[in-house]
Image 1 (cartoon, rainbow, N blue to C red):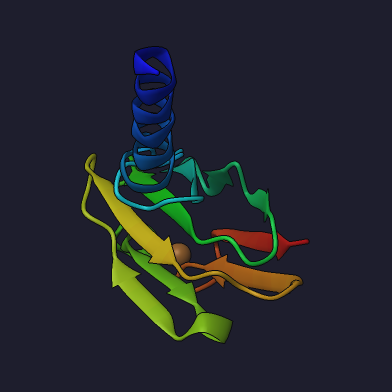
Image 2: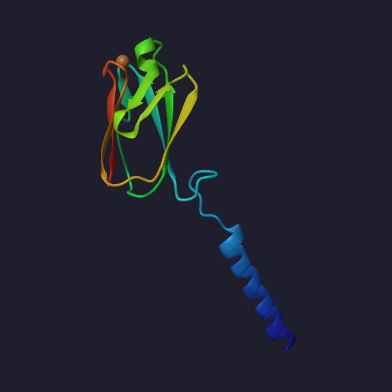
Length: 119
Ligand SMILES: [Cu+2]
């Protein structure tokens, strides 16, 4: 009888842990998100083409190493995002879960161009 009770308690503990405490996170604070780092340098985004899964939010850390002011501006025209990237500091863009498609991004004068492929 005691063994059965202990088993039951153990089972409850596992259930509590699994449903309330265990959070499968790839990115701290954002469950089921993925994270990509993009370096802005020498006229190119590295990587310039990012592919992510449909319906998953994603965090993109942009690190701008190019001093030219033009590199500072980052635009995702289809997503209504524009940001100014600080120099040599990561700047995080958090994108919501998105539908399949191709979402270009570029700097103000399109010297830097890249695309986000959601598939
Ligand atoms: Cu530019």
